[in-house]
Length: 96
Image 1 (cartoon, rainbow, N blue to C red):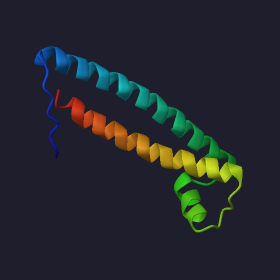
Image 2: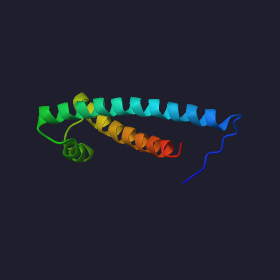
Image 3: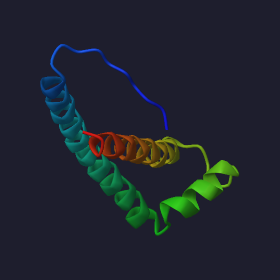
Image 4: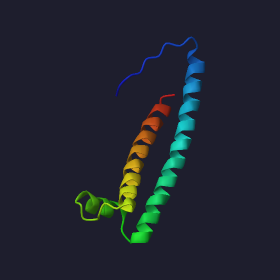
Protein backbone atom coordinates (compact mmCIF):
# COMPACT_ATOMS: atom_id res chain seq x y z
CA UNK A 1 0.00 0.00 0.00
CA UNK A 2 1.30 3.43 -0.91
CA UNK A 3 1.49 6.54 1.20
CA UNK A 4 0.27 10.00 0.25
CA UNK A 5 1.96 12.81 2.13
CA UNK A 6 0.31 16.22 2.42
CA UNK A 7 1.67 19.22 4.24
CA UNK A 8 -1.17 21.26 5.75
CA UNK A 9 -1.25 23.95 8.42
CA UNK A 10 -4.11 22.29 10.35
CA UNK A 11 -4.13 18.50 10.23
CA UNK A 12 -7.44 18.06 12.06
CA UNK A 13 -9.29 20.38 9.68
CA UNK A 14 -7.61 18.84 6.63
CA UNK A 15 -8.58 15.32 7.70
CA UNK A 16 -12.14 16.48 8.32
CA UNK A 17 -12.37 18.08 4.89
CA UNK A 18 -10.84 15.03 3.23
CA UNK A 19 -13.22 12.68 5.06
CA UNK A 20 -16.27 14.78 4.14
CA UNK A 21 -15.17 14.91 0.50
CA UNK A 22 -14.64 11.16 0.36
CA UNK A 23 -18.05 10.52 1.92
CA UNK A 24 -19.72 12.75 -0.69
CA UNK A 25 -17.86 10.97 -3.48
CA UNK A 26 -18.86 7.59 -2.03
CA UNK A 27 -22.51 8.69 -1.99
CA UNK A 28 -22.29 9.75 -5.65
CA UNK A 29 -20.62 6.45 -6.53
CA UNK A 30 -23.32 4.50 -4.70
CA UNK A 31 -25.96 6.30 -6.76
CA UNK A 32 -24.09 5.64 -9.99
CA UNK A 33 -23.62 1.97 -9.09
CA UNK A 34 -27.31 1.64 -8.33
CA UNK A 35 -28.29 3.27 -11.63
CA UNK A 36 -25.85 1.12 -13.59
CA UNK A 37 -27.08 -2.08 -11.91
CA UNK A 38 -30.66 -1.15 -12.81
CA UNK A 39 -29.67 -0.64 -16.45
CA UNK A 40 -27.97 -4.04 -16.45
CA UNK A 41 -31.07 -5.68 -14.91
CA UNK A 42 -33.18 -4.07 -17.64
CA UNK A 43 -30.91 -5.54 -20.34
CA UNK A 44 -30.98 -8.93 -18.62
CA UNK A 45 -34.76 -8.94 -18.32
CA UNK A 46 -35.29 -7.91 -21.93
CA UNK A 47 -32.97 -10.64 -23.25
CA UNK A 48 -33.30 -13.37 -20.63
CA UNK A 49 -29.51 -13.50 -20.36
CA UNK A 50 -27.21 -12.51 -17.50
CA UNK A 51 -24.72 -9.72 -18.09
CA UNK A 52 -21.80 -12.10 -17.49
CA UNK A 53 -23.18 -14.53 -20.06
CA UNK A 54 -23.75 -11.67 -22.51
CA UNK A 55 -20.23 -10.34 -22.06
CA UNK A 56 -18.67 -13.75 -22.73
CA UNK A 57 -20.61 -13.97 -26.02
CA UNK A 58 -19.94 -10.31 -26.85
CA UNK A 59 -16.18 -10.68 -26.38
CA UNK A 60 -16.18 -13.70 -28.69
CA UNK A 61 -18.14 -11.74 -31.29
CA UNK A 62 -21.14 -14.04 -30.93
CA UNK A 63 -23.67 -11.46 -29.78
CA UNK A 64 -23.41 -8.83 -32.48
CA UNK A 65 -22.16 -5.30 -32.31
CA UNK A 66 -25.36 -3.32 -32.56
CA UNK A 67 -25.89 -0.19 -30.49
CA UNK A 68 -27.72 -1.98 -27.69
CA UNK A 69 -24.95 -4.56 -27.33
CA UNK A 70 -22.33 -1.81 -27.22
CA UNK A 71 -24.26 0.08 -24.54
CA UNK A 72 -24.76 -3.09 -22.49
CA UNK A 73 -21.04 -3.92 -22.66
CA UNK A 74 -20.19 -0.33 -21.72
CA UNK A 75 -22.51 -0.38 -18.72
CA UNK A 76 -21.02 -3.67 -17.55
CA UNK A 77 -17.49 -2.27 -17.83
CA UNK A 78 -18.56 0.95 -16.10
CA UNK A 79 -19.95 -1.02 -13.16
CA UNK A 80 -16.59 -2.69 -12.63
CA UNK A 81 -14.78 0.65 -12.67
CA UNK A 82 -17.29 2.27 -10.31
CA UNK A 83 -17.05 -0.61 -7.85
CA UNK A 84 -13.24 -0.51 -7.95
CA UNK A 85 -13.29 3.23 -7.21
CA UNK A 86 -15.78 2.71 -4.37
CA UNK A 87 -13.46 0.15 -2.76
CA UNK A 88 -10.56 2.60 -2.99
CA UNK A 89 -12.63 5.31 -1.32
CA UNK A 90 -13.77 2.94 1.42
CA UNK A 91 -10.13 2.05 2.07
CA UNK A 92 -9.20 5.74 2.30
CA UNK A 93 -12.15 6.47 4.59
CA UNK A 94 -11.01 3.74 6.95
CA UNK A 95 -7.77 5.71 7.35
CA UNK A 96 -9.48 9.01 8.32
